[in-house]
Length: 531
Image 1 (spheres, rainbow, N blue to C red):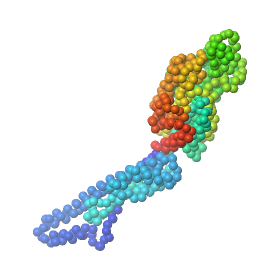
Image 2: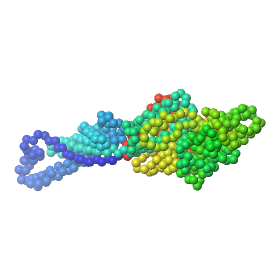
Image 3: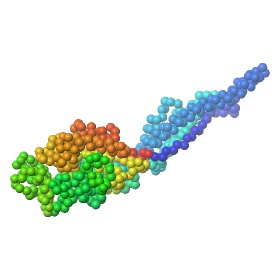
Image 4: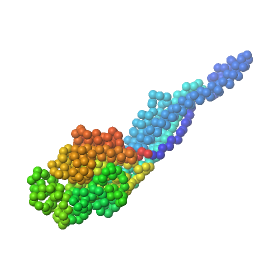
């Protein structure tokens, strides 16, 4: 926002109606007898000489007081103009009310100087304001100058600042309860309406959507992007199969399933960093998500196990009770059909594809409409991809540089639950995998540095916290929202994750969620106008 004030001081001398005599005639007349006394010649000379000196000194004092009033006047005008310039309000009458409110708050009407009416002119992006104040004189009133009028004016040019905003939104199965996903879609739509306003493709606004559950969906069309591990280069690729066959080769063996675009987390420390992908280091690439076929339920039940993602015949001996062998055998995937509609290699990650930064509102509206509630909760993966979407480096490059003088970067994270890859975020599942499959594989694989379920959930929280700090260090503004959650550690984690306590919102119900999104939307609109 460009701001320029032209300083003006005008003295409006208000005198009594003249009777034809000079303003100081009364004073000179009163000295007439003194002048006739020849014995007072020296005193006459001194007295006459002192009159203009006294008037000059008095004028300097009174105009110093007037100058102080003008400074206060200018400060109040500045505050009013900046408030109007950063407001998302468009109604002229409402803007004038805002101007008057800020002017009054910054001009103490009990102090010296009585302000007149505030004049406000709004011409497109130019906001002009002026005001005057009358200052009673203390010294020069003896020569008939009772008041001095000072005036000031200010002009603000509204310069819209760009914004890149990414919504990282919980799309897990629990969001399907109590109409929560519908409430989220409605609330997110309100934010879009506020931020985009009447513009369908604004020049200085970009928004992205990152739905997350057990992982995220970057889109199957990214397979040839160069940052998807298509050849088993990552130390995590093929980890779940006996012969280490890479994920895309496993998909190729199935007749009716192909990679849907979900990816797995990178090995530490790259999972919590924005390190650009490098084909010379496979661990900086992303492995296609592939949840293995778990042991046949009927067979596993004989040894007291239960599995939730059995979608192929194990094709092994009836009495082979080695569950890991049954699960990891690569041949059973060759030329096979997945007959289940609820299970398969995309188990726990059947969410909508993320939408990279775009200024096309219809694409954002469609992305919000496409969201579905399914899967368990892995917050750090969603958070990491929200960061990568805002980053200027690959895998997505739509983001401006971090030190851009044009764009503010904003990440909004919403969750309705704690990190959960097992039974309610607590104990392990009663099978050899110990957990559901997620972007961090099965807990039994040790990708989180542990094979203990409780420790694994703690590690997910720690990685969430690490990501929050890493993101904020780049200057990205972070909002966090908890939705229909009882008090607990996750609220503390989300509050700490936000840029400040004022950027954390707890929403106990659908109506509050909608109000919070409107509040954030208005704040973001103001952010675009502050520079």
